[in-house]
Every structure is written in C-alpha cells, then in structure tokens.
Length: 100
Image (cartoon, rainbow, N blue to C red; front, side, top):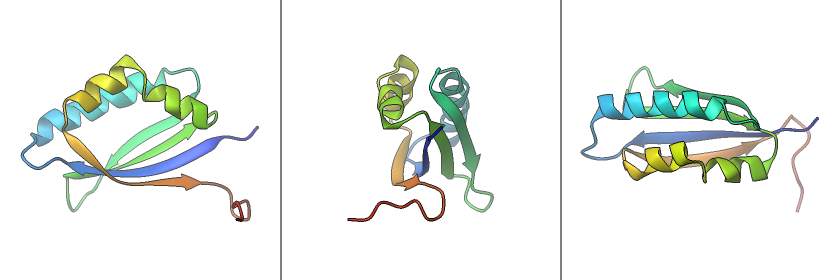
C-alpha cells in the first residue's frame, strides 16, 4: 500500500502567544490523528527555538490531506492565525522520485 508523506515547517506568527499556539497544535494533532485516512501526524518543537515546529504526516493519498484542510478542527486552528508555514516537503522512499 502506498502512502503520501509530508514534512512541514511552521513558525510562530509575529505577536502570537506561544503557549496558545502550543495548546492549539496539541489539540490539532489529537483531532487529526482521529481522521480515518491519517496514518501519522506528529508535531515536534525545535529545542533551540521553541517558536519553530516540524510536522510529520502520513496520509492515504493527496486527497486525504486535502480533505484534512476542510475539517472543522483544521479550519478552527488556522483561523487563529498563530503560525506560518515555512515549507512543505513531499516525501517518498529513496529511488521513487518522479522524473519530469
């Protein structure tokens, strides 16, 4: 079975409350893990800069990730405007990259 993996870097929005962001991210992670097509959703905090986070995610496919963005808990977190996305990487096994 093939899965869709991503890694994303996010950082605290300027002026946002770090404790509120941490609580919101913890809630988002818990609710996201209950989504039926989510196989992994972990958020790690940078040990040297606590305003930066890395998300590790595994979904059934790209459509499952797109559906995640339409979920009420995802929309509720994003509406708080606590963090910014720095990067998103689509990941695969070594030797499986797409060629143009």
